[in-house]
Amino acid sequence: MNRSCTMEKLLYVNLSKKQVTEITINHRLEEEFVGGKGFGAKILYDLLPPGCDPLSPQNVLMFMTGPLTGTLAPAMRGCVVTKSPLTGTFADSYFGGHFAQEIRYCGFDGIIITGKAAESSYLWISDGTASIHPAQEIWGLDTFAAVEKIRELVGDQSVKTACIGPAGENMVSHALINCEYNRHAGRGGTGAVMGAKNLKAIALRGTKTLAPADQNGFMTIVDQAYKELAESEEVQSFNSDGTAGSIDFANLEQLLPTYNYYDGTYNEATRLNGEAQRRTFWLRNTACAACPIACGKVGSIRRGRHKGLISDVVEYETAAMLGSNLGISDIREVAYLVKKCDALGLDGMSAGGVAGFAIEAFQKGLLNSGDTEGHPLEFGNVSAVDYLLEKIAFRSGIGNLLAKGVKEAAKELNRGAEDFAVHVKGLESPAWGPRSVPGMGLALATADRGGCHQRALPVLYEIGGEWKGEMVERHGLKYKGEIVVHQQNYLAALDTLVKCDFGQYGIKAETYCHLMETALGRPWDVEKLMKLGDKIWNQIRLFNLREGFSREDDTLPKRFTEEPLPEGPYQGELITKTNLDQMLDDYYAVRGWDDFGKPTEDKLKELGLEAMPTLVQIPTGNQ
Ligand code: SF4
Image (cartoon, rainbow, N blue to C red; front, side, top):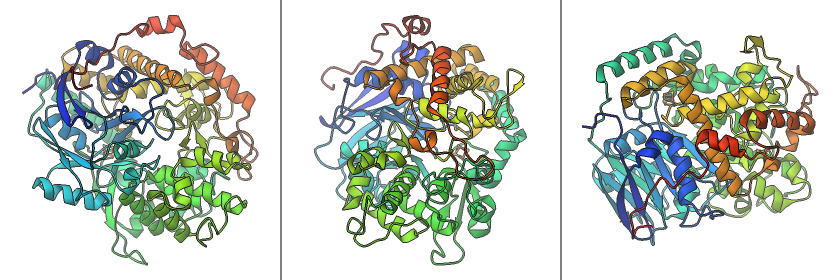
């Protein structure tokens, strides 16, 4: 039993050489980058040659855990880190369930996978012993069937699995990795990287245990964290409605994507919200390992053409992206489309963005029925979206274009398609239209993996919040840079633990620090946490700069900068280029970056990132 909550080892898998090796974690890596996102940021920078093709054998696919993953600390998860085939940036994508915990019970703090298997394969890890096996019997199966089959192959129904569906096999740039029923590493095309490596699945079974350095002290803080979760209104709303409860808020505030982000309000939003879902199919709550929040809801559709379909909660992002964004208001149809994405292994958020883009392209005459085998692409037409998802996952016909994501598809279509391609750095935008909340626009423009709401969600300050004792002006620019930097740093630090986003609405920063202190047996405080986040953010910036990104890429789609909201309480609002530029200047200044978005030498020195050596050593003969 380990007494400091770290396994001190990473598993290194070279699929080309069919070799597995253990790497002892460098003490400095553990001290300075802690785990999860931090490990991923540093190791990706160290191992990847600049300009590495994300779908080449050289790219690495990492499954990382944090020091609290697998303990009784509530709401902890795992993350996949790689270079994204969708954006070309650093990508980290988080998943719940039990897979991350099992990595640690197998004796590892993370798995690094490189190379490409000569044939379709799966990786089997049983208590520290890893082996690579042919996966012909699993290749081609959807994610649900693949999980069943791999359990049968390893002869254990309780193994924890990660797998890809047809979309990953076909290297669709927005393919996901399924890490349990309705738990995915969804964003950034991690599934395509796994498919490019000919790796269909990973199965794990572990029995090792973790013990915090100060067991009694740790359990006292765990109790405190549970108390804070129970006392938080936001967290309790996740328990009662999942994230679908955000539909009403986003609709009221005109943030809800509607008709490929044409508007921010949807007349039929109440048909997609938590109440509608409860009425239509929820039966009971479900939860990831050691999570009292239990934001998942599993149920069965009670009426209509999908009667009997087992479905989980349609969480906010997919309810919006595959619902209001496509003009689909029947939550049962949205649940069907979400489940289809899950089975095919498509990120439902990107799929909704891509489908919205395709429908608008069809409306504008850039696509025609010859391209879609006679299927009319229209908003509100479920069968059209159904058709598109299938085509995308198998890269067939029009699906081959759309499998590249909105950014690349728009480039190829040309003829003005880039005007309505809603993405940042290639990542299809999340369901938070920012035109009336400029800070949210800045958060999307500067997010490390492309337009993302999980790196900072300043709307929570912009709509009735305070900063430095002052009410934050929703439409003003004051403090927006500071708020975004603060949130990005804080969340980057917490993503080393690796926390679930929803837990942080209840658990205080000090409590996370006390959890770390008692688990690891060394001092932690909020200042140290914030510095850690700053360091990781800058480490990732160095990676993205090395890959050719610059200030020009810290921008927003034209839909948000040139097309005002067409109606409603915030009619006429948009984020002008001038305002975005001003916010970027402020943001770079707070970050200690120059006008081009590059960390200054002083900043790198302050963070100890100047001339930082490689902190991961691959055993000779297995590079
Ligand atoms: S809040 Fe939801 S997603 Fe997060 S760990 Fe708990 S059950 Fe999983």
